Length: 241
Image (cartoon, rainbow, N blue to C red; front, side, top):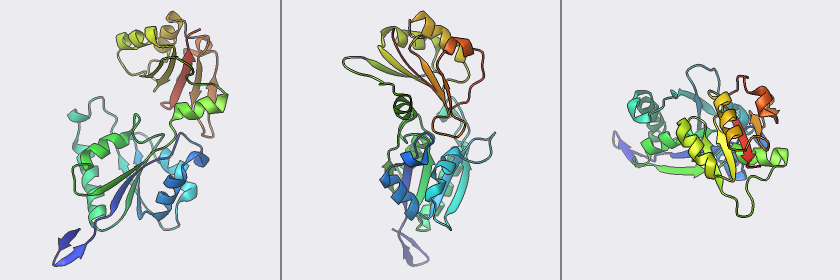
Protein backbone atom coordinates (compact mmCIF):
# COMPACT_ATOMS: atom_id res chain seq x y z
CA UNK A 1 0.00 0.00 0.00
CA UNK A 2 1.20 3.54 -0.77
CA UNK A 3 -0.03 6.96 0.37
CA UNK A 4 -0.22 9.94 -2.01
CA UNK A 5 -1.69 13.30 -1.02
CA UNK A 6 -3.26 11.79 2.04
CA UNK A 7 -5.03 9.00 0.10
CA UNK A 8 -4.22 5.31 0.36
CA UNK A 9 -3.60 3.22 -2.74
CA UNK A 10 -2.95 -0.51 -3.04
CA UNK A 11 -0.13 -1.43 -5.33
CA UNK A 12 -0.89 -3.83 -8.14
CA UNK A 13 0.61 -7.30 -8.54
CA UNK A 14 3.32 -8.06 -11.10
CA UNK A 15 2.91 -11.29 -13.07
CA UNK A 16 5.59 -13.00 -15.15
CA UNK A 17 3.77 -15.25 -17.60
CA UNK A 18 5.32 -17.90 -19.82
CA UNK A 19 3.29 -18.24 -23.03
CA UNK A 20 5.12 -21.30 -24.37
CA UNK A 21 6.92 -21.61 -27.71
CA UNK A 22 4.18 -20.64 -30.16
CA UNK A 23 0.94 -22.59 -30.00
CA UNK A 24 -1.65 -20.57 -28.01
CA UNK A 25 -3.25 -23.82 -26.84
CA UNK A 26 -0.08 -24.64 -24.87
CA UNK A 27 -0.67 -21.82 -22.37
CA UNK A 28 -1.55 -23.14 -18.92
CA UNK A 29 -4.98 -22.53 -17.40
CA UNK A 30 -3.28 -20.38 -14.73
CA UNK A 31 -1.60 -18.24 -17.38
CA UNK A 32 -4.86 -17.70 -19.25
CA UNK A 33 -6.71 -16.73 -16.07
CA UNK A 34 -4.01 -14.18 -15.21
CA UNK A 35 -4.01 -12.69 -18.73
CA UNK A 36 -7.79 -12.35 -18.63
CA UNK A 37 -7.71 -10.48 -15.32
CA UNK A 38 -4.73 -8.12 -15.44
CA UNK A 39 -5.03 -4.43 -16.36
CA UNK A 40 -1.80 -4.04 -18.34
CA UNK A 41 0.29 -6.34 -20.51
CA UNK A 42 3.99 -5.66 -20.99
CA UNK A 43 4.96 -6.92 -24.45
CA UNK A 44 8.75 -7.24 -24.86
CA UNK A 45 10.29 -6.55 -28.25
CA UNK A 46 13.77 -6.09 -29.69
CA UNK A 47 15.12 -2.87 -31.17
CA UNK A 48 15.11 -4.27 -34.72
CA UNK A 49 11.64 -5.83 -34.90
CA UNK A 50 8.10 -4.52 -34.75
CA UNK A 51 5.53 -6.25 -32.59
CA UNK A 52 5.95 -8.98 -30.02
CA UNK A 53 5.84 -12.72 -30.66
CA UNK A 54 4.81 -13.39 -27.06
CA UNK A 55 1.89 -10.98 -27.38
CA UNK A 56 0.66 -12.61 -30.58
CA UNK A 57 0.68 -16.03 -28.91
CA UNK A 58 -1.40 -14.69 -26.01
CA UNK A 59 -3.75 -12.59 -28.16
CA UNK A 60 -6.66 -15.10 -28.19
CA UNK A 61 -7.03 -14.57 -24.44
CA UNK A 62 -6.83 -10.75 -24.27
CA UNK A 63 -9.85 -8.90 -22.98
CA UNK A 64 -11.24 -6.14 -25.19
CA UNK A 65 -9.81 -3.04 -23.53
CA UNK A 66 -6.56 -4.39 -22.12
CA UNK A 67 -3.76 -1.82 -21.99
CA UNK A 68 -0.68 -2.96 -23.91
CA UNK A 69 2.73 -1.43 -23.26
CA UNK A 70 5.58 -2.31 -25.60
CA UNK A 71 9.02 -2.22 -24.01
CA UNK A 72 12.28 -2.55 -25.92
CA UNK A 73 14.87 -4.77 -24.28
CA UNK A 74 18.30 -4.56 -25.95
CA UNK A 75 20.03 -7.87 -26.62
CA UNK A 76 23.31 -7.58 -24.74
CA UNK A 77 25.91 -10.17 -23.74
CA UNK A 78 26.46 -8.69 -20.29
CA UNK A 79 23.36 -7.29 -18.61
CA UNK A 80 25.45 -5.43 -16.01
CA UNK A 81 27.18 -3.39 -18.73
CA UNK A 82 23.97 -1.97 -20.24
CA UNK A 83 21.28 -1.24 -17.67
CA UNK A 84 19.87 2.14 -18.76
CA UNK A 85 17.05 0.74 -20.90
CA UNK A 86 16.27 -1.89 -18.30
CA UNK A 87 16.06 0.69 -15.50
CA UNK A 88 13.73 2.85 -17.61
CA UNK A 89 11.47 -0.15 -18.22
CA UNK A 90 11.52 -0.97 -14.53
CA UNK A 91 10.42 2.55 -13.61
CA UNK A 92 7.59 2.41 -16.15
CA UNK A 93 6.37 -0.86 -14.62
CA UNK A 94 6.55 0.58 -11.09
CA UNK A 95 4.47 3.61 -12.12
CA UNK A 96 1.75 1.25 -13.36
CA UNK A 97 1.90 -0.88 -10.20
CA UNK A 98 1.81 2.19 -7.96
CA UNK A 99 -1.36 3.27 -9.73
CA UNK A 100 -2.97 0.07 -8.48
CA UNK A 101 -2.85 -1.76 -11.79
CA UNK A 102 -2.07 -5.45 -12.08
CA UNK A 103 0.67 -5.85 -14.67
CA UNK A 104 1.68 -8.96 -16.62
CA UNK A 105 4.99 -9.42 -18.40
CA UNK A 106 4.69 -11.90 -21.27
CA UNK A 107 7.63 -14.05 -22.23
CA UNK A 108 8.24 -16.90 -24.67
CA UNK A 109 8.67 -20.38 -23.25
CA UNK A 110 9.18 -20.44 -19.50
CA UNK A 111 9.89 -17.25 -17.53
CA UNK A 112 12.83 -18.75 -15.64
CA UNK A 113 14.51 -20.44 -18.62
CA UNK A 114 16.81 -18.32 -20.84
CA UNK A 115 14.27 -15.49 -20.58
CA UNK A 116 14.28 -11.69 -20.66
CA UNK A 117 11.92 -11.90 -17.71
CA UNK A 118 14.76 -13.08 -15.46
CA UNK A 119 16.45 -9.67 -15.70
CA UNK A 120 13.16 -7.85 -15.08
CA UNK A 121 12.49 -10.10 -12.09
CA UNK A 122 15.92 -9.31 -10.64
CA UNK A 123 15.26 -5.58 -10.98
CA UNK A 124 11.88 -5.83 -9.25
CA UNK A 125 12.36 -8.53 -6.63
CA UNK A 126 13.76 -6.08 -4.07
CA UNK A 127 10.91 -3.62 -4.50
CA UNK A 128 7.94 -3.71 -2.14
CA UNK A 129 5.61 -5.43 -4.61
CA UNK A 130 3.97 -8.81 -5.00
CA UNK A 131 5.42 -10.91 -7.84
CA UNK A 132 3.74 -14.01 -9.23
CA UNK A 133 5.68 -16.08 -11.79
CA UNK A 134 3.64 -18.49 -13.91
CA UNK A 135 5.62 -21.22 -15.70
CA UNK A 136 5.25 -22.01 -19.38
CA UNK A 137 6.12 -24.86 -21.73
CA UNK A 138 9.76 -24.52 -22.89
CA UNK A 139 10.44 -24.93 -26.62
CA UNK A 140 12.41 -28.16 -26.29
CA UNK A 141 9.59 -29.88 -24.38
CA UNK A 142 7.06 -28.88 -27.04
CA UNK A 143 9.43 -29.99 -29.81
CA UNK A 144 9.94 -33.42 -28.26
CA UNK A 145 6.19 -34.01 -28.22
CA UNK A 146 5.69 -32.44 -31.65
CA UNK A 147 8.15 -34.75 -33.45
CA UNK A 148 7.71 -37.82 -31.25
CA UNK A 149 11.20 -37.67 -29.78
CA UNK A 150 11.93 -38.59 -26.15
CA UNK A 151 14.25 -35.90 -24.84
CA UNK A 152 15.94 -38.02 -22.20
CA UNK A 153 15.26 -41.48 -20.82
CA UNK A 154 16.64 -44.09 -18.45
CA UNK A 155 20.05 -43.14 -17.08
CA UNK A 156 20.90 -40.74 -19.90
CA UNK A 157 22.61 -37.49 -18.96
CA UNK A 158 20.90 -34.50 -20.59
CA UNK A 159 22.77 -31.28 -21.35
CA UNK A 160 20.90 -28.06 -22.12
CA UNK A 161 23.38 -25.94 -24.04
CA UNK A 162 23.19 -22.34 -25.28
CA UNK A 163 24.83 -22.30 -28.72
CA UNK A 164 26.13 -18.83 -27.86
CA UNK A 165 28.53 -20.28 -25.26
CA UNK A 166 32.29 -20.37 -26.02
CA UNK A 167 33.27 -23.13 -28.47
CA UNK A 168 35.56 -24.83 -25.95
CA UNK A 169 32.74 -25.03 -23.43
CA UNK A 170 30.34 -26.43 -26.02
CA UNK A 171 32.73 -29.21 -26.99
CA UNK A 172 33.51 -30.01 -23.37
CA UNK A 173 29.82 -30.56 -22.61
CA UNK A 174 29.06 -32.52 -25.78
CA UNK A 175 31.82 -35.00 -24.95
CA UNK A 176 30.05 -36.13 -21.76
CA UNK A 177 26.35 -35.73 -22.58
CA UNK A 178 24.19 -38.69 -23.65
CA UNK A 179 21.48 -36.36 -24.99
CA UNK A 180 21.50 -32.64 -25.66
CA UNK A 181 19.18 -29.71 -26.20
CA UNK A 182 20.99 -26.91 -28.01
CA UNK A 183 19.25 -23.53 -27.80
CA UNK A 184 19.73 -20.25 -29.68
CA UNK A 185 21.14 -21.93 -32.78
CA UNK A 186 21.29 -19.08 -35.27
CA UNK A 187 24.61 -17.22 -35.43
CA UNK A 188 27.04 -20.15 -35.45
CA UNK A 189 24.96 -22.94 -36.96
CA UNK A 190 27.79 -24.39 -39.16
CA UNK A 191 30.08 -24.51 -36.13
CA UNK A 192 27.44 -26.33 -34.09
CA UNK A 193 26.89 -28.89 -36.87
CA UNK A 194 30.64 -29.50 -36.96
CA UNK A 195 30.77 -30.03 -33.19
CA UNK A 196 27.86 -32.46 -33.38
CA UNK A 197 29.62 -34.41 -36.14
CA UNK A 198 32.85 -34.67 -34.15
CA UNK A 199 30.95 -35.94 -31.11
CA UNK A 200 28.87 -38.54 -32.98
CA UNK A 201 25.64 -36.61 -32.39
CA UNK A 202 24.67 -35.63 -35.95
CA UNK A 203 22.77 -38.73 -37.01
CA UNK A 204 20.19 -38.37 -34.23
CA UNK A 205 19.89 -34.57 -34.45
CA UNK A 206 16.70 -32.70 -35.36
CA UNK A 207 16.42 -28.91 -35.61
CA UNK A 208 13.11 -27.10 -35.19
CA UNK A 209 12.80 -23.38 -35.91
CA UNK A 210 9.90 -21.27 -34.55
CA UNK A 211 8.16 -24.28 -33.01
CA UNK A 212 4.39 -23.99 -32.93
CA UNK A 213 4.25 -20.84 -35.06
CA UNK A 214 2.80 -20.60 -38.57
CA UNK A 215 6.23 -20.68 -40.19
CA UNK A 216 7.59 -23.58 -38.14
CA UNK A 217 10.38 -25.47 -39.86
CA UNK A 218 11.81 -28.94 -39.14
CA UNK A 219 15.26 -29.95 -40.41
CA UNK A 220 16.35 -33.56 -39.97
CA UNK A 221 19.56 -33.69 -42.01
CA UNK A 222 21.55 -30.89 -40.41
CA UNK A 223 24.71 -31.32 -42.49
CA UNK A 224 22.81 -30.76 -45.75
CA UNK A 225 21.51 -27.42 -44.42
CA UNK A 226 24.60 -26.27 -42.51
CA UNK A 227 25.01 -23.08 -44.57
CA UNK A 228 21.44 -21.82 -44.12
CA UNK A 229 20.52 -18.76 -42.11
CA UNK A 230 18.35 -19.61 -39.12
CA UNK A 231 15.85 -17.73 -37.00
CA UNK A 232 16.81 -16.88 -33.40
CA UNK A 233 14.09 -19.29 -32.17
CA UNK A 234 15.87 -22.44 -33.35
CA UNK A 235 16.52 -25.49 -31.19
CA UNK A 236 18.30 -28.79 -31.77
CA UNK A 237 17.41 -32.06 -30.04
CA UNK A 238 20.03 -34.78 -30.32
CA UNK A 239 21.51 -37.84 -28.70
CA UNK A 240 24.73 -39.76 -29.13
CA UNK A 241 24.51 -42.43 -31.82
